Image 1 (cartoon, rainbow, N blue to C red):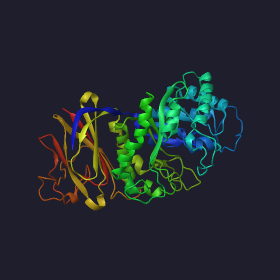
Image 2: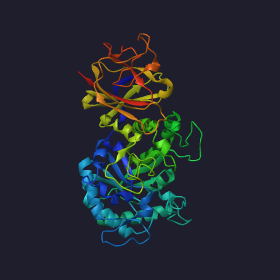
Image 3: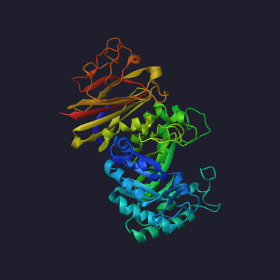
Image 4: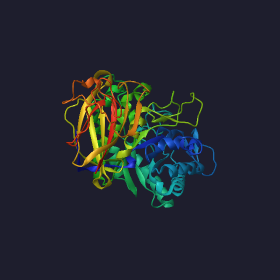
Length: 482
């Protein structure tokens, strides 16, 4: 692998590492930093983008600032006090926020009232208001709580109602930022972009990597863990995110991936708990940023680990139906945590030769004095053990620390392990060319040693790092100049 300081365009910002929640989570008292460890878990991602929406927005969320009861069977009531609690969380984490305004029940006046309170309470932390969630699916009956529009619903009628809501919002708060359409379909993105809505802030797209719920094909887009890390995944991401990017570029707006994840298919906890989801989360987030996605949120919920949303980054370990104030993280969040050192950097040219299913990303920071290279080794540790890697870096740079997440295999569940950032050990295992008699299958992770690998690696006088990297891992090297 060769890392350089030659910038290739986009950068990685704090908003590229984010979490999407169901709108009903706004009413959860555990958003208050004094009521749970949610703030601490979020801060482990830096200052992550936060988004509140999902299917619950249009079907189960009722807003009131006057204390009324829900009018159409909505299960959860959200009030200004809930937004004030969110503001406490935002102040602690330094996050930016996007919030959905319910459109399932047509009520522009109520929507404008919610938007005005969000603007006033969240202030500069609020970067976007989304009117409705996935309006192209309003007639789909298999969405939880069913269809919210009749057969005649289409993108033109969506635009009519969108414009009425936006006009009502801007009558109260003229500068309120509007994002949309929160769908996958490019035609609906064009409809939003071409609407008369003022103060459009971004084109917001939704997309899940493994969306063919009935498929068992590998490689493919079915909800099998192997499909998360197959090279086909990048091709699918480039194609599908390219739809949103092209529509955003045509509208001269940024592309925000407001809701995404490994899969939205029911019954996929096994896939979401695998070590492969950690590798995927890191790789997909970095790759999407290189494609020009400027904000991204992995869909989650404050539900139970056992029985809650399978793709959620965090979950409540209490028995289903109970609640605790101590959230746990899942493997995909462990993968995202490793990206924090890259935040604030610009991507540079990074080449990879050989290695099988491996990829790497490098960013440059601190006026060119710091390089951060993230290596995803998706070769299955159960089969290959690991791979000898030679990392070439520009003159004057050396590795100051490394960190890693890894598992015994790609498929192992709830067993992803973490090696925190530390300087490389004095003896670095390396079984590649020039090593004395060790095999690649005896490789070890960053910061670890292997009894059967000869410790003949480390930083060489030629400016190259030689190290055995475990399979089924994500490793981050921080390199400093001088």
